[in-house]
Length: 418
Image 1 (cartoon, rainbow, N blue to C red):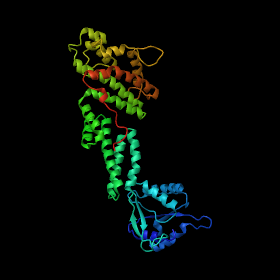
Image 2 (image 1 turned 30 degrees about the horizontal axis):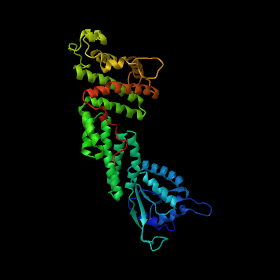
Image 3 (image 1 turned 180 degrees about the horizontal axis):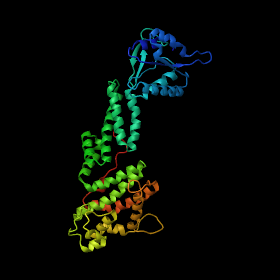
Image 4 (image 1 turned 60 degrees about the horizontal axis):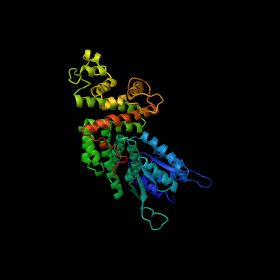
């Protein structure tokens, strides 16, 4: 600016400065640039030249100023990892001040200040009246964080959303809350998002009881239905199976097809296991071959003669579990589904049972099963089509038969609560 006094006073006003970085313009043509002012500023402020440095930048290129300043600040943070960075944007061209302000906004732990003083006219501050004035930017940082948090929520990255919202709230608390009503509103919204994201992260990890308790305590009207649903999922095994499909679809949206297939396989298996336990008291993990429903005819139709002869404690494989469920009720949903023609648009007509073997071949060669091949998007589309048919023709009818409403199993909210 026209006077170096505000900068000199800024340096004098602090007795804790370890280093000063001058952001200055270089000489251009007949313009000497502000770099020439540094020796005089150091002399009058009494600050050691050895602990000062300069960053010479173009006077009116905000993008380039920001880039160079950002690089230098990142280096300073590594050199002084525990230091507080104070940005003073007094003086300089508008481009320089704007770039420095923007750089400060990229650092949640930074402090911003301005040397403000009395003005007797529109030209300049009265010399000697300048005082360092903190400029609260915490709520601005929080507002900028909102876009990142919304993006994380939409990507189902709930743990990331909860963690970042918590970090921003800590920064706000450290700043002593010197912001206005708008800043307070942002803080309240971030606190809400942090807890809500924590709940849906627990839900995404199948901790339905924890999700229910968190959402219940939160008490937000927009989340009441999901809070009640989480409570029901913790109690109703059948609804948890239905919710597993939503979990698989969230994996699909993130491009995690191996995870989606693993959940799809488990959904088919779980459906049969749940049905056998509920209807026939058969636990495929602890086989009781004396169960009254396991007649010789059923054992023969399911192809379990050898298993029964050896008194196997578990059924080995998904297909055997499904065949047992079909053999126990030849007119039931399992038998009808396995015998029906697969709706996959293929030229070769196959039953759903034969098509399932194709699905299992893809799954068994995948990394999360027994192989080394990642699931492609094309293979996942096959799985998805098959599962949609399974849910419509097997799982949902079984849920309704058990008095459970599959439509009550909602997807997660697309946006964080307001």
